[in-house]
Figure: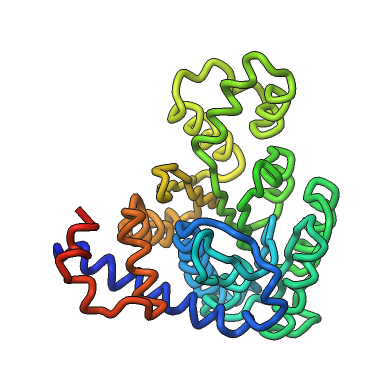
Length: 316
């Protein structure tokens, strides 16, 4: 195992263990109610946690209240598909990774069963008066969400992890971007490209593309990368700096985590932590290695197993 791979494994295992510890605080609450995703979701959660730590540290030093907003927040507990492992949901991760407590947390999900479970789980780790969960379609409650953010007189960190395409409409981004703060968006690189191709012959998918981009800038893109760059340029209309890192799942599907922030007078130096530090640890990690590191963190595989011939062969 190379030195860089060993360093990556140490970083990943440390954070995977932290996710496990966080999960164990709430996994006895309605354990039958979870969201189910593939193992790469651990990397998305690490991105949320990493930025939550940085974000709350910066705001605390400026004596500004921090607010967390989670669009498509889910149940607060995630089951890894084809595995028995559980992970905490993004809201639980953001709260637990925060170096200083959020003044207020706002969540949105359209599944009543999952929002009920999330409320129970959040109540264990926060005072009930310090968070609000909206049950409903995001497009129907986004105005109330934005009004509540502004009412709290703080700066938000908003995570948008769409369920399908729910939560990805431009109108939602535009409205939430009127609130002060940072926005992290999960961009489903290949799915958007498939919708783009279908839009050529299908009016429904053409409308979906218009809703996502908010205008016709997406038309005539000649590659997936160009389409994504056009979306990023659109995001820059509301946030000067958009930083991207790639997460690859076990099927080699690429997801992008897009961090959108305003450029400050000093050049927003903290953004380099996302672009330089986090990106090096998370981007394009081998899915099989990641599964093995998760097993180590969850104590299904000993540390020494990493260096066995079979383990070494699986990483080549």
